[in-house]
Amino acid sequence: RSLLLIVEKNRMLVTRKKVFAAVVAAQTALVMAVVTATPALAGGYKTGGYHAEKANADIVDVAVANGNFNTLAAALQAAGLVDTLKGDGPFTVFAPTDAAFAKLPAGTVETLLKPENKDKLIAILTYHVVPGKVTADQVVKLSSADTVNGEKIAIFVDKGTVQINEIDVVKADIMASNGVIHVVDQVILPPAS
Image (cartoon, rainbow, N blue to C red):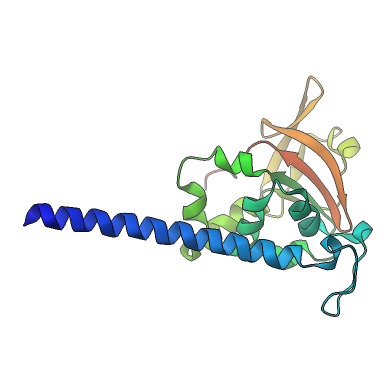
């Protein structure tokens, strides 16, 4: 009888994990469907009463069009920050790729996407955003910058590579209508509070 209970509990746990994975996948698919339906990614044609030329794609549209920021897009949606980063700005975003998110310990992304962890997710994501449009030419002249999170990031240049808190910027100056994106190879975590 106790063996049957253990087997049943294990089945329930596996089922919960599968359901959670399906929910995360569905949320990501929904974000991708909504964002890719925007005119900036639809050839600049009028869609749903909104019109934007490709040259006027905002930070969110540019990131999604790139194809390497699906996890970031899902996280922005879960944190309620998509509209903010589609706003006037300007913003400088140090954007972690899907591969950067994959470097976090197993289960971290899924945990952060849960509604009860929204504040923590917002704190992490806003730590990747600096107010204003700061291009690579400007970044290399700085030693730190204030983030939207309220904390500072440290900026170093090591052998020609810009680092944010010792994390490499692997691609710089991806321009958007409301700012600039610099791609980082790890998620930049804010200081522990």
